[in-house]
Image 1: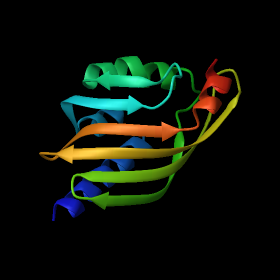
Image 2: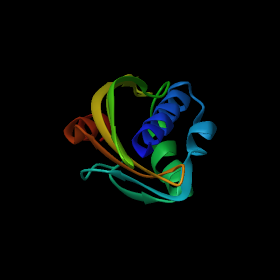
Image 3: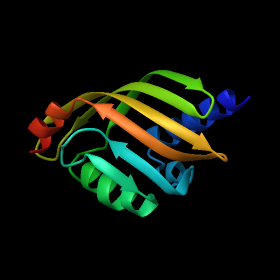
Length: 131
């Protein structure tokens, strides 16, 4: 049962985020959630708490883009409290540079809330596009 609840919550988050409902998507996170971006890019590191996730990660990233990242989810694989999302994103920076990356996100869900996300992507592409 936990696996299916995890899958449904993560798919609900994907739906909200994909439709641009950032407030609704972030409401699915625990207040002390941690978002970790792998690597050493300007968007890498551990962002602890909703404020850090929204102000220190999402605002600078999406502020550099024309119209957000349009994601195509390839698969959602869930087991217990964790779900892995494989997706491809397409975006363009405000300066007109294409930013099309592939992602693997590992979500952990506890108590009906997302408590962590660990995100893997092509960090060399991020450095090249956002340097």
